[in-house]
Structures are given as structure tokens and as C-alpha cells.
Image (cartoon, rainbow, N blue to C red; front, side):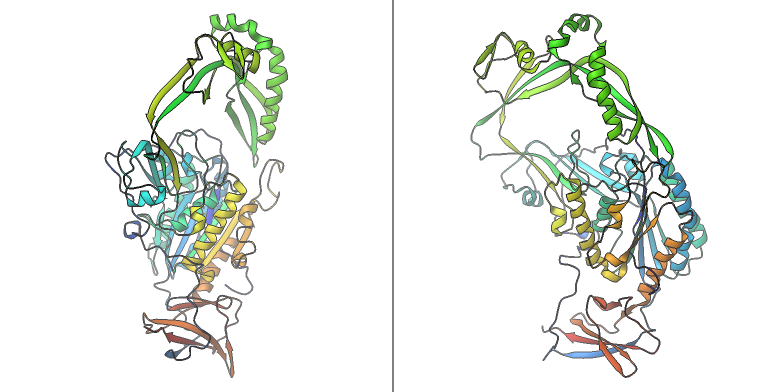
Length: 619
């Protein structure tokens, strides 16, 4: 990168907000026992796992002693051949409808990104910042992701890989159900530019249309997870693997909202999580428990006030009508409204009593609207209806508590309804109580979450429910994988985000992109990131700066000729006239096999020579 320009890392993420209801991802059920490929067998998953560690080359003694050494000299004007250099650019596009104007500005600015790179082999892939676990099957595919899922037959045995993950024994069998899912990138929006490509203008137009198409024809989400999707793209070793070791890589993030990624965040309807691309969930029979297990539960309905909250949301000047969906029911107190039972039985439902509405619901409505960043919160359709609930953990020998008297904590009540009335102040719906008991073979639940093909401990963390802790771990996983794959000098990231309140209609409700600005704070990649305001009318400068950084980095990359498999680059010297200076590994240069890249802070001039000391490792 030129010394006069800012250094950065390029990640392309286009992000925004749209509150829409979504269907669940479609699940494909496969008959028979599924096969899950071992982490150590990556042939079916793309290129081999780049391995563990921090991305640094193996260290050798400063003085190689008796090891065989040779010197190779390269003029600083003789960088690596550009025709075979691979450049990968990931565009993570926020497809919220409110981002349409941003998409148009990005589309118009793409020429400043692509044209300077036309001398290289460039691949571009577009995905979105959407929370992929919340998308329907087709919408998920249209946003650049694929998935597969399966249901294990009861009684089937886990294979070797599953047993390792679950800590299961070979004789154990699957119990109630088991469900797995693997998310990876597809090639819905992928384009290649080659050196001297005669179709570059036509392809550029197609790329511009892709940006507009993905925002026009797919649904956004109310929870952006740009960090998660970047991390998944870096680790992906699926059938459409994008990033490979030794690429020059870039990602550009465009977002008008801050990140909301979680490592593990359960969807209660599907038992799914957010930021994983492979997991197994379900149960195993547990032969270590030599007894029958009694499932004991009481289900019943109580009368509750149910309603919806509606409010206007100001999203960068665009007013969106949103609602909080059904509140689930505020239980109707027996002491005050028991006289409504007869009317409820005859009419089926009632509007909320005036004092209950005023004291309980209206205040809650104002709170929800405020907490959601909305204004003019209103209650929609408040009425009294039965609300389902459940109790668990009764003694297996207990009688049906829904019939006859009921005893609890040394007290006896005329009925279960009387207990709820006196102790819980709620009204039981007549005839709704049922006590279930069942015997089953004992089993234990499990949920294993991991990134396929990765041995990074950050990608195998247990459940983290705190979002900030999750994001810190996800950021570390991004950093670790970027260093492994590309090294410091060949990874670039740029953010187009809300840096301040320049074009924010309501600063009280609009978030800033601090999670992206601080992505590599206090790390060795902190100077590889730049952030620009999304409010700019033209994105050409930041995209051009991204291209400039890539071109400069490739121009400072050198390849050692006639490099043998048993050789290693040990030391590098810069010879300028009569002065010879030893460069510092990792700080002044990075090494990847037979190539090395000189850091942009090292001054190189025409006539300078790079002298490389190469040693042969002992057999």
C-alpha cells in the first residue's frame, strides 16, 4: 500500500434494517443413516484445512550453523508475476429495503474497485448480512447461502465423527430425534475477471445488476450479523469454497446498523443457532441409567390479556410500520376479574377491562415502543383469551392433580383451580387442565456446534449467551483465520458505516458501526482497516483505496525461484547501495512458502536488492 494512503483490510458487507416476518428454513429429511465427513477428511469439503497456529512460518535459529544455506537476490522491481495472482473480494450486502439508495451508490462506484485490478485473476462473491438461520430455504439460497439438514432414525448409531463430537460410545443409539445442519456459501452471486478479459465492461454491468438484484428480490432481517457471515466465509470448506490459502483477500462492509452476531443463539422453534456452519442436535439413549424415566407434566390454560404493539420506526428518514407481535398474554388477575368468567364462556373473548388496560397494558405499550426505538406506540386488538402454560416436575407417584383436591407445601386445596386462584391469583379455564405421565427409555440431550474443517478453539466455543462476549470471540476467529490464510500484508478490510450522526435522522435510535470500526483494535492487523461514512455521496474513493492497497501489496510480493520442498526462507536483507539491513520477520515482512511480502512501511527504491537466505531443513 502506498505510504501516503491509509492501510486497511477489505471486507464487503452491505447492511441495513427491515422488519418483516419470515418463515423457517425448509428442512430436508433423508432416509437412513447420514454420513458426516470427518474434520480430518477435507477432500470432500474443498481445499485442505490450513491448519492451526497463528499463521506464522516455522522459526529457525538465527544462525543456522551446519544447515545448508544458499542466497538468492531479487531486485525490488522484480515482484511476483501478476497474471496468476488470485484476488478474492467478498461483498457482504445488506439487503434491507431501506438500503436501496446505498446499493445504487455502491453499484455506480464499483468501477473504481474493479478496473485497477484487471491485471489479476479476480473473483468476487456477494452474500448478505442477514441472520441466515431466520431465512426461508429459497431466500437463503438467493442470499448466497446453502444448507442441508437431516433427521436421524430412532435407534441408528452415531458414526465415528459424531461419536467424537458427542462423547458417545459405539453401542449407543439415537433416541427421540437428532437434527443436523451445515451452512455454506453457494455461487448464486459469483463472478470472475481474468487478466486481459475482453468482457470486463459487460461483467462489470452484470456485477452492478447483482448488487441491485439481491436487494430488490430478497428479504432483509431485523438482526444483521455481518461479523458472523464474514467468519463463515473465511472458514467455509464446502463445495463452493471461496477463500484459499495465499490469496490476496478483501472484504468491504457496508452497513447502517451495528452488528448483532451471536455464536450460539437458540431459535426455540427449530433448536437452531446463528453463527455456526455445522451442528448436531438431539438425544442419545443412555444405557448408563438402569431405570425407567417418568415424564410428568401438567398443561392448562389461564385467562390472559393478549395484544399487539404497533409503532412507527424512523430508519434513516424512512418511516417503517412495525409491531412487536403478540405479547403472549398478561394473566388476568382472579381477585379483580373473576366475574368475567361467565361472559368469557358465552362470548369466547372480551375486550380488555378499562382499568386493566390503563394500568397494565398502556404503560407496557409505551415501554415496548420506546425500547424498540419507535414513536407513537399503540395497542392493537387487545382482548381476553385463554393462554396456554405448563407445569413440570411433579412426583411420579402423584395422582392426577386436575381431578379432586390438590395438596402443595403442606396445604390442601379444594381443587387445582382453587390453588391457582389463592396462590397465583389467576383464573383457570374450566376443563383445560390435563396431567400427563409417560414411561420411556432414559436418554440424554446434546447439542454440538463447530466449524467444519477448523481446529481454531474460538470456533468450538460452548454456548455464549452474551452478545458482546460472542462478538469478541467471533472477531478473534476472524483474526486467526485471516492470519492463517493470507498473512498480514494480503488481507484488507474497508467499512462503509455510520461513523457519526451526519446523515442519521434520529440519533437516539440509529446505531453506529463501532463493532466493525473496532474489529482489529489492539492487534497486529489494526492498521489494515479503514472506515468511511456511509453518508458519502460517492463511494469511489474508498473502493479505489481498496484497489490501491491490493495492487501495492501484490507489487511488494516476491517469489523465490527454484525453491525446493525441503527449503525454508530464514532471513531477508535489504541491500541499498553499500548498506545492508536485516529485516525483521512479521514486522517488516511475512513469508508464505516460497513467497514473501515486504511490509508497506519498509521503504523500497529502484536499484535496491532483496537478499534472501534460504536453508535446507535436515531430513
